[in-house]
Length: 74
Image (cartoon, rainbow, N blue to C red; front, side, top):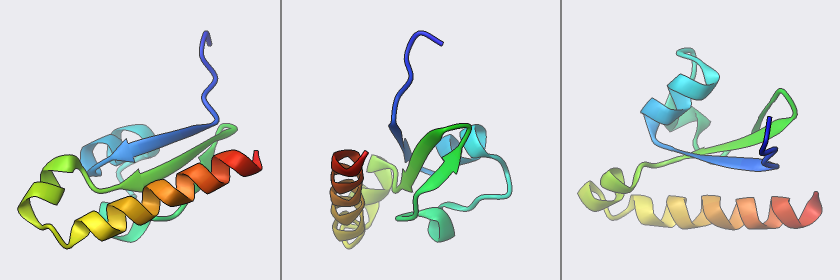
């Protein structure tokens, strides 16, 4: 692998299911770190979902803050 990211942010259900598997749902997985094959994933809302429901912007921003803090730890 040419690139070995420490954290990958998965934007939306399609990205989540394609990378981690069909057993994951965005509503339950969102905001929780998931580690697989030495890479940490953070599922969160797709930007289109933020346009449809502005209340999700708070969750999205909190998820990104978690990613920043986690990156500082590793």
